Length: 315
Image (cartoon, rainbow, N blue to C red; front, side, top):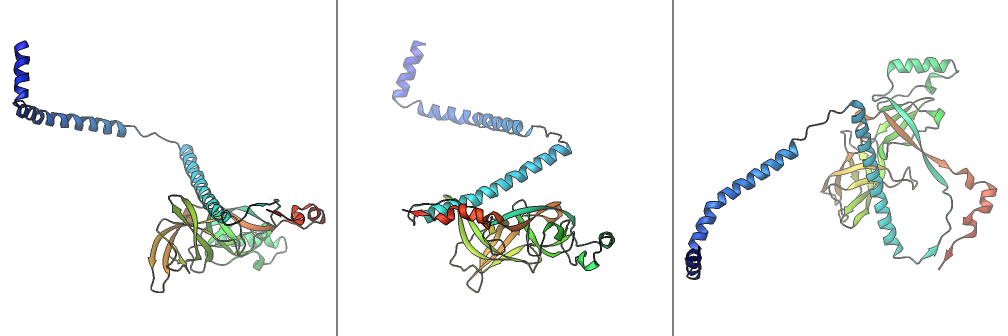
């Protein structure tokens, strides 16, 4: 052993072991590669060998509901992030102020409604409604709605009126176009006569921020388009689209969908296409968004005690 060690040391000093090292590395490298490949294959097999669980219908429905709630929460956080980002940007340009909070003059509430039909008022249902209305002295014109669209089981008796927005969660489905005593007809956002003021919310590394405002209208082909946004504004595929107002009044931000196409048009504006945030074939229940006047603001007692009458303090 002592002699072998002496020989190795002498050979290494004169560089004789360099070629031997290279030869051993080349011989052993294929084996190392094979072992690495086998290890990767085993890991992949373990990752994919997990058997799929046999879920019941109830468990599937529960998972779908959880996914829906998560998506609604994501949208709410997105618009809240954009609101806070805009608030911080605005606050930086203003002096600090002590503001006394007061009640809102306009409140927005939702009336739950079931979807009776997706193709308007069926003949059989029409006759049933008319027969029921006759017993209460109502005429046919007060009971029947004409046209295509989603038919809801809420009407004038619930305060539903033409023009009110209809939503599924926070996603806009359309608006009420016709209403009778007990039913209402919804014009979907994809209808070529639908239009609404919207605002783009841009996703950026520093967070979401309000973008340009425009007019959303249906194409009649399952999508929507946004017009009125000049090419100087920043728009990109993947941007989110929210309501700019609700029938001209500032209110909760409702979600319309996602930008799937953004190209320059010949008129110096963006050609923007939007994919709606809902599927009509999956809707069973929706919400009619109503504006209500806050009557507590109009009473003399509330006005006398209202912090607004005392004004705000600036500093």
